[in-house]
Image (cartoon, rainbow, N blue to C red; front, side):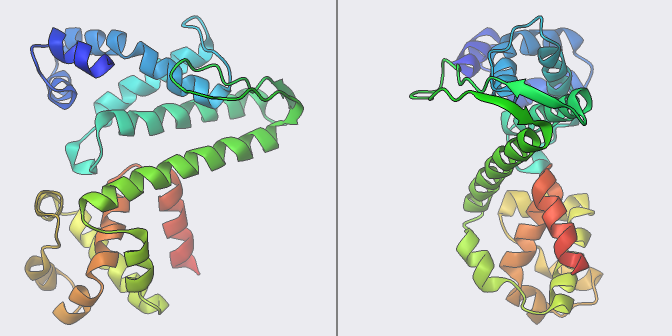
Length: 248
């Protein structure tokens, strides 16, 4: 609904096209988008805080700042839409804010699901919920959302999680080489554009840039693509998992 209203107002200009204009210096357009997407911001802030959020709340201000940050940092090369990207940034910044505000304290949180856009959202009230328990619950929810977003991105490359399980290198050295190839790809803007536009690896170019055989790259093609997608996107938990996997 918001997207349709904004498209009408901006003469059918897409949100991503508007962001590009903002990044080029159109500050008035920035104010228009932020005003149009305040309900979107409030919804995502509310999903973290587990209560209705008013525009006068500090948490809403954090959400506004995060949305502005997402607009400034957004790039189509990330492989996701602005709204998907900003959703991650907003929730992460609000959680960081709550952590700072409630560190080492016990809090009472009313986990009332009052979003008007969510159907059949039950009401759960938790009293004397420790901050660590709250943090764990929030992290779990964000991790699930991140996995869903990554799954959608994989689908656009005709890949699935089962493909990754089957194609994942069995040895640590092989995994490290695959990650090295993925990093080389991501750090080269032309190769990264090729990946997202063609939905396939630029194997010929990669062979010339890394000390890995063409046969090995082709064998680990799906795994390398998946790692490149993670490295190219703002996935907090998947990037942490990737770091931990390489350290083992």
